[in-house]
Image (cartoon, rainbow, N blue to C red):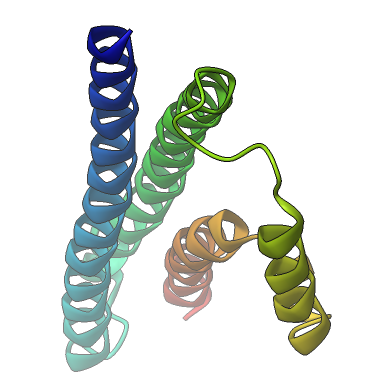
Length: 149
């Protein structure tokens, strides 16, 4: 029985590590995209929105779209590993490794929700994806401005 518990706990731990890795990779990608988008915007501004910078604006648009798709994929992977870890938590509870009474956890969770009633409704992955979409929109707007100049 202890071997089974250890195996389930190890599997649970692996899913939690994979979840953290997806979150870390999403943060690193976003940092790279922000730095590159800032540099591209700076270059376009330095060139005074010259027609020659149109490909740079389009590159920024593509970079934003790529970032949005990639962080959405990272969210999907994180969600998968979280779901697996939750299922394994249930198995650990059924094996008697974790207590079945979750009243204390539920109480503190509710306290947290009461403290942040509006923020808890905002999905974090939507903020991450929205940031990349804003970069894509910025590239699109720059391209329009460049073409209309």
